[in-house]
Structures are given as C-alpha cells and as structure tokens.
Length: 311
Ligand SMILES: O=C(O)COc1ccc(-c2c[nH]c(CNC(=O)Nc3ncc(Sc4ccccn4)s3)n2)cc1
Image (cartoon, rainbow, N blue to C red; front, side):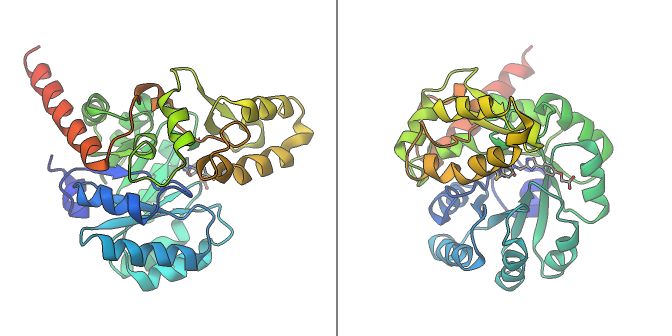
C-alpha cells in the first residue's frame, strides 16, 4: 500500500478519515491514526481554543501523525490558522473554499497542505499555489459537495496535475479503494463510513440513520443557494425542499442547513436536523471500530486485486 501519500504523510495505509464538523474529534482521529490511516480533527465552525484542546487531546492519545481539517467558510478561519501556525500539526486539509492565502505559512512550518477540490480548475490552481496533494471529492460525498462524480472527476484531475490525488466521495469499502486506485488516486478519503464507527462521538441515532439508509436516501438540498449539501432524507429535508421552491427563502435555507447539523449529529434529533451523509450510506450496514473498518478495507482490497489479476 506504499504510495506517494503514505510516504508524504508517514502513514501505513493511504486511508484518510474525513474531518467532519462536530463529529471528527480527537477520539476518532487518534483511533484512525492508531489503526494505520490518517485521523483528522474537524474544525467545522468551532472557535480556535476548542480545536486547540482537541489537538492537545489527540497528541496525548496517539504518537502517530494526524491532521486537522479547516472548513474555510468558518467565521473563525483566521484564528484557526493562527493557532495552527503555533501547533505545527503534520497535515492540514481544507474544505468549502480556497486556502491559497494560508498555504505558504503552513508549509514554512513543515505542515503538509491538502485541499479538497471539486473540479479540475480548482485542482490546477491549488497545485500552482503549492498544495502538497489534493483530495478530489465527488458529488457522492456527504455535506457540502460539488456536482461531478468521483468516477469522472478523479481521472480528469489525475491527468492534469503532478501532485498525488486522494479520491473522496462514495468510498466505504475495499472495492471503492481499488476502484479509486484504478482511477489514478494514490489514497482515499472516507467520511460517512467513519461516522458509523464505535469511536465516533456522533449520536447513535445519527449512526443508525446512516446504517438504515437505502441507495436513494442521501439527497441534495441547497443547490439554489449555491451551497449544495448532501443529507439523508427526513422531515427536515422535506421542509428544505419546500422552501427551495421560492428563491427568496435563500437566507433561511442556508441558516437552517448549517445551524442544524449539530441537532442531528450530536443531539440525535434526526427528524429535525440536517443528517449530513454521503451516498455510501447505502453500503454501510454496521457500526464497528476504526481498526476493523481499516483492516476490512485492506483485506477486501487484497481479495479484489487478486481477483483482478485473474481476469
Ligand atoms: O472556488 C472556490 O473558491 C472554492 O471552491 C470550492 C467549492 C467546494 C469545495 C468543497 C466541496 N467539498 C468540500 C469538502 N467538504 C466539505 O467542506 N463539506 C462540508 N460539509 C458541511 C459543511 S458546513 C457548510 C458549508 C457551506 C454550506 C453548507 N454547509 S462543509 N469542499 C471546495 C472548494
């Protein structure tokens, strides 16, 4: 499983855990890193001191590398970056924006910078401003998404950049890992699958909603506000879909969506909150610990690869 990603990040397997707001805490990140992947603490829209505490906790829970994911639409993004210049974590991933103005300072302190990009144009721009690698995320992913599928956007970016590509969006098992590598990726980022892990502090109702979800339950809302977000169908999503019939509800939709993720993910109000999850929800049938999640991906990918060698 040695790729430029395992070398760049000094990890055993090129499996990155998605840094999801609220639920990607030190417990989850350290469990993934201990299991040989890269655990990632999710900043979401939290203030810098809260994230600093999570980083300290992770440093006590594992000696292995872990990362921090910065959601660039957070009102606290500048404070978070200032704190990260001090903390010197090994990896920073970014989402929902362009991290161009922070990359140089992070790289100067030895932090690897890996932006999530949903398109070729942004991928080329990020390579030009010094990204160490790219997480190329397909529309299958949960939360804030682009419009292109993993299957099509990953090879197009691989063809256009020289830095390593990590595929994300819809990957939850060994088949997805092997498929991503076939498309030219040198690693995968996995989010929804890790929400349904024992170590993740997400509410059990949120985990069960994902486990019980079927193939067509992870729908997209917010396209009309310019912030498409993939969530699992529930009473709340039906309310959003109704509001979307009238563009004048734009502000209300955004406010409802961002503010209500905690309600589902932490408080377990899975009918009245936004249950952010990807289309891989239909593949996820159990809740298991991070070591088993990673070991099962590796075992299944070995099986798939030996099968591929014989066809
Ligand atoms: O062109 C530019 O300046 C930036 O363009 C981009 C557009 C999209 C992305 C992107 C897509 N996916 C990701 C990584 N994933 C995510 O960021 N997932 C998220 N889930 C919930 C979030 S909170 C939120 C934020 C906005 C609206 C609603 N909710 S952020 N980044 C990255 C860059």
